[in-house]
Amino acid sequence: MLTPEDIQFYLGIFKDLSFTDLYELFKMAQAKRIPAGDVYIEQGATAKKLGFIRKGLIRAHCVKDNGDNVTLMLRWENQFIASHDTLILNQPSRFTYQALEDTTLMELDYGRMEAILDSNPKLSSYRNVILMRMLSEALERMESFVLFTPEERYLKLLTEKPNIFNRVPNKYLATLLGITPVSLSRIRKRITQAPKR
Amino acid sequence: MLTPEDIQFYLGIFKDLSFTDLYELFKMAQAKRIPAGDVYIEQGATAKKLGFIRKGLIRAHCVKDNGDNVTLMLRWENQFIASHDTLILNQPSRFTYQALEDTTLMELDYGRMEAILDSNPKLSSYRNVILMRMLSEALERMESFVLFTPEERYLKLLTEKPNIFNRVPNKYLATLLGITPVSLSRIRKRITQAPKR
DNA sequence: AGCGTTAATTATCTTTTGTTAACTGCACCA
DNA sequence: TGGTGCAGTTAACAAAAGATAATTAACGCT
Image 1 (cartoon, rainbow over the protein chains, first blue to last red):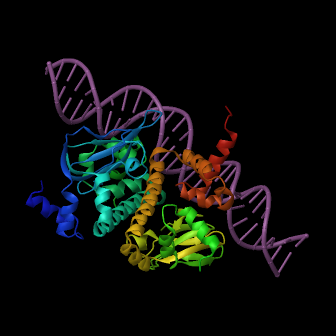
Image 2: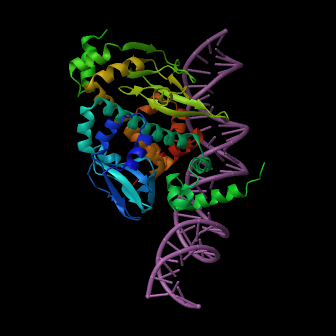
Image 3: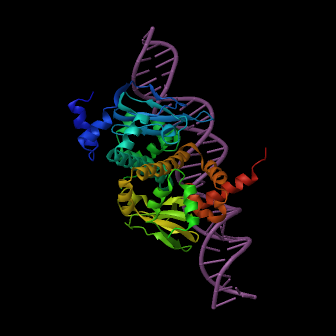
């Protein structure tokens, strides 16, 4: 059930949608609470669900053949969270999605949502907006690997999302940046010791 | 004007679309030829155009502050090519899109296309398919930077698109992989000298 | 208080990459 | 034929990152 506060909240986020469209979309969503440490989507899962994080933090990771634990993605407040493998590629999720904090999210069954979206042009075009936002985020991250050094990527994350370092262990952030935790520690040291100019 | 061969071709590519829908989409497209070396989209350009490459190869690149010339993306046959900056972010293109070979593409004015897409639910849903394909490509590339070493990324490209190495100078492929041309040369040497097992 | 767990840092060493510059091979061309 | 330009390789050195292990710090728990 949506409270007035919820409605206020969602109208703020989804500025382009009318109230009725918004209601159409969210009346089939249900709130879900995930305690810190719990897994939201198991590796190998095939369920097509789409979550919108209202509070908390979810980490997508996998374990490589050599045993390395690698963070693929972090998602936090006001972001969508879903397994791209199941939603886009229609295959079992290669990654595990786990809450790092107590997390509350609105969850939609993607199959049901698709039907509603397809029958409502306004909502359908909103799906495009969401897809394009996700695409631009993915491209920006991809570009950062080509354009920037690990140290520059660290500084970028530091300026764009400073409080993430208080919420997520460095070892998870390191692999997100494409480096090892040891290397991240060295980068941090280099920067604090850097000559001020 | 679409020839029967064109129609045959596009029906093969866009399997999910009916002929009439396809015609609707492509009657506003026009063929364009770009000689090898010519720029398709200038850095700073704002025109919203969407190209579909029928033949040839286009490279997106930029020049960093330190003078480094970096390849962001390569697109080839049966792929869409567009400046994400102009289409998605509505900002001037940060990159230059240049043909590395004589390239022929079908070009659409994205503004006009949007109007047609919005008025045709079937086409609109097809836009989603395209966006999702682009998103999965971007995510896969992004993941490759987190999961694989430069050497592994090179081997991945080699197996997935072997003939690209005959079509694109190594120095462009190197920066695409996130390394320098010198480093790519060393990787190639390491691999050819690797003990066979 | 003492124990155990885990994250983070530090140390040591190896491997890889970046940087710069020299060298090689090749195409183009006057 | 010799010169010019450029891609690719190689060399030499510096810088950074990976691997492994030891150390430190923080926290919860009995």
